[in-house]
Length: 194
Image (cartoon, rainbow, N blue to C red; front, side, top):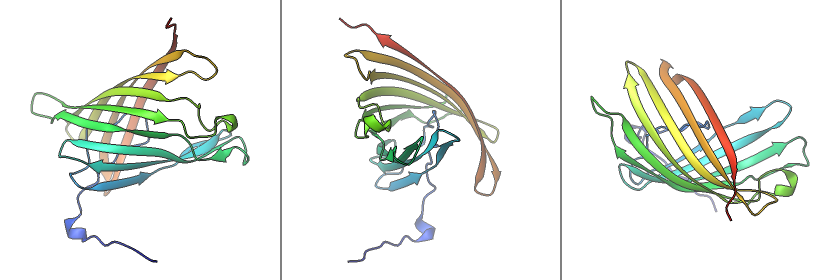
């Protein structure tokens, strides 16, 4: 059985692309639309990942997403396969105005489906909350992103606290291409919950 779909280019909307980096902008997929993204994350000598994102616009300001790590290869062909899956919701609280940035909150979790014995995942579930602020200055879009996560700790009964942040800038360069830069960091601490 063959199937296919056709979209009229005149009715196509501009994609709300999210880069496979730490920060996410406040852009959401339009209501009723589905957007599929795929990328390549390579670390020479360590392996590579093929992250994927499937996003569905539930309203003009809300989207649901599933982001599987479609393929992960670490230090050799025997350590390759499907990675973990992230799933969650993103909601823009307000759009940018002349005096305030756009603000978005997101909540998501990591579902541990990868083979942890091969090093493809941690084997633990994680829960995250994040906030993003977007502000345009001249032709550039600046994004400030903050994230807090509670991470399952492999090999122990404890939980790790993750705090991460990023500042990024994107500017149109050539037709369809942007210049993009990001500075990010993450701090992880083991929590002693008794």
